Amino acid sequence: MRIAVCPGSFDPITKGHLDIITRASKLFDKVIVLVVINAAKQFSFTQEERTELIRQVIGDSLPNVEIDSYDGLLANYVKEKGAVAIVKGLRAVTDFEYEFQMALANKKLNPEADTVFLTTAHENMYLSSSLVKQIAHFGGDISSFLPPQIVEPVTARLCKKD
Image 1 (cartoon, rainbow, N blue to C red):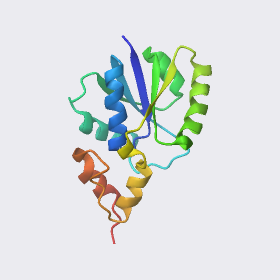
Image 2: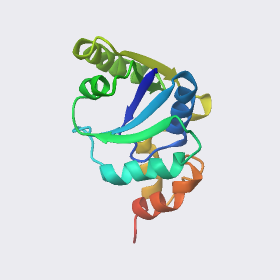
Image 3: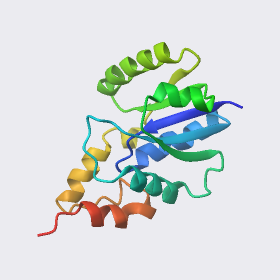
């Protein structure tokens, strides 16, 4: 069984994330969407809340996708799960520079796993969780950026109250 891990902070999950996850699910027998801790980021949702938002979005629509969370080295998690690949989405060249560095580090820590880069669909090139959070904070409509199942709870959390 070819297992891939699709890690991210998913704070919150966007249509761009969902596109990468869906496409990865067609390439691998099993995809684990992994909510990870990034010490460099400040989160709007807890790790448990982010995991639950992903569950709401994916539901039963992708039967070979499971959701998990982890607070540790990605390379160790991938090894523990017997995964053969780490799937990362790329929006622009600036994403590639950072992700390439991470891919090399993960390969050094776990030589058995490769990193697979999927380029984003053109309609998601500008889309990021940070952008969604900023728009929501100022009361903007984020419904075109998020899966419909989570628009309401994300808006409720992120919209600035006067």
